[in-house]
Length: 182
Image 1 (cartoon, rainbow, N blue to C red):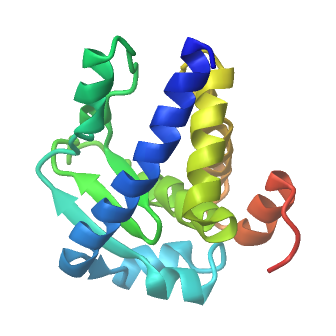
Image 2: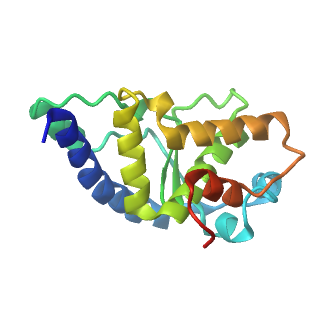
């Protein structure tokens, strides 16, 4: 196994357990989506998805402990979650309080993270992590080129330009991922 294959295996294996533990840690403290936010997203996402999701605001999104272990093993990881405004763990979304509240980007951020909720729902935790990490490795370890991120940003851009024209995100994500109906 070459160095890149080792890194991918390391990231997938550790990423699955980290995402699962983060969901379990933060979900009980999260709150349901409601009010104007929910109304703005209705029509894009199913009621089931909007009902299931929980939001938890944290001071800052932390890097996983296994990043330190990989650095010590000589594997450099170019992702830094501390710079992110949001991150999704299955049906639980963490939002960093470090984001600039004056920046009117709340709904696009929430929309983007909800696309990841749908991706997790369709692919499952292991499938999501596999696609995310392999996509990261195949695209030069560049976050902006990870196919699951490209999909989320593309759909977010559509939402930002035409929020009055809802379409079925779950159907669109399923088709683009090449995964049949549930």
